[in-house]
Image (cartoon, rainbow, N blue to C red; front, top):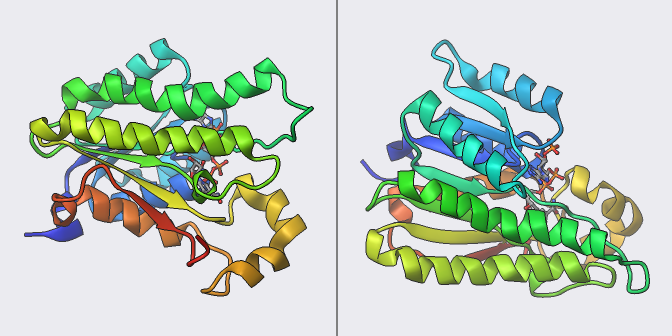
Length: 249
Ligand SMILES: NC(=O)c1ccc[n+]([C@@H]2O[C@H](COP(=O)([O-])OP(=O)(O)OC[C@H]3O[C@@H](n4cnc5c(N)ncnc54)[C@H](OP(=O)(O)O)[C@@H]3O)[C@@H](O)[C@H]2O)c1
């Protein structure tokens, strides 16, 4: 058996799995027969509703509240995953804050909130998951952004946080290669979610004009890349960031 079909029964933890791209990723893994933990920070209703919808008769999907920037919460999230499903095979670090501000409008609290969630969160989650990931065979998949390669005005700190994710992905892949654990990332362009509602409203026609594939990206455009990277077919890929932006970059 090869490809996504070999994911049946695997335990997957998706941070930020309650909404947007993370929810599409969660749905895709659940459809492949995985047992999925949805990590979320504040959107209790959305997370619980999705978990109920996907749980099935055997309760194979649960939602767990945890701020990825809080070391104790991260430890508890991974512990709850292992307690519920007996292990952890695949970690998807999708949670992030997508806030933009121009120079002159940034303060330490703003900068810290983005770096804590988007960068430290990835490190803390990786540290916590590592003792449980199968070796060989474990998978870590991170979310970068095409804005790491081509920042736009006001996106500086967010873009830099995603550049850090690309470097963490590369460095962790080197560190974990000898253990047979792959670490990869996806760098989406604009995908229609809550995070981008304002940008699409303000710059929709401009985004369309610069996108060779001529439409706005949808969450489903990214979900299959994540399940591919989690599958055995991607076993010889590590340290890579795949740009998925309809050809813009
Ligand atoms: N949408 C795009 O165009 C785009 C483009 C490039 C990259 N990305 C990346 O793709 C990923 C998903 O983006 P999205 O657009 O789907 O985002 P979204 O719709 O804004 O959803 C963000 C998710 O992350 C969770 N989250 C935020 N901060 C958290 C924290 N500190 N701890 C735990 N969970 C937290 C949210 O949970 P709560 O709702 O419960 O707080 C929510 O589930 C992000 O990494 C983003 O940077 C998105």
